[in-house]
Image 1 (cartoon, rainbow, N blue to C red):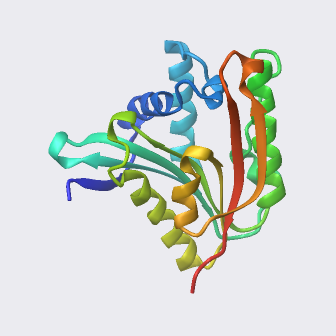
Image 2 (image 1 turned 180 degrees about the horizontal axis):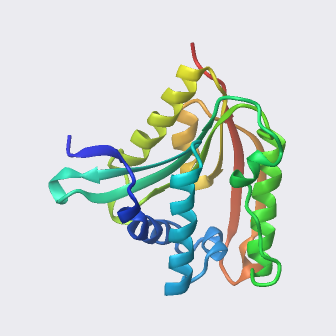
Length: 209
């Protein structure tokens, strides 16, 4: 099989950010980081570099196509916490909106994510899928499932619950891996210059024996 999972390196971070932007283009989530300038990209690179170097719970992974010169086709950010933590220690999994510079919708979405993560994980031991993105040109090849399998295997090995927030597009895949929706939230996209409705589900998975 030409697809392989590997750790993301610091040299991959620009491509990781680019794939994330492409995967979320045209969705409400894209408004969290709209049209990143070079300065914005560098901030994202610095933020992820810090996570890789200083946050042992953070695992950044990529799926590469070995037949396309190891092109990155999908990425994931998992957090694995085996012990109870303090509220101070869980801040790296909670979005921190900048009320001076972030847009109203960006603040609203970040506050939603913080609420869900505090409500369903809080300071408890958990395996958390922070992000999973597949390049639009390489969807339906199994890359996303590979990254998801990696995380649920860790959760089962450690006998820990797993948590994620899912769009409608990803919900069927997550359900196949044992995640169940516990809370569904919707937004009217027309309020933000987009079309339709965005629905997001807080999903939990119990460890399997």
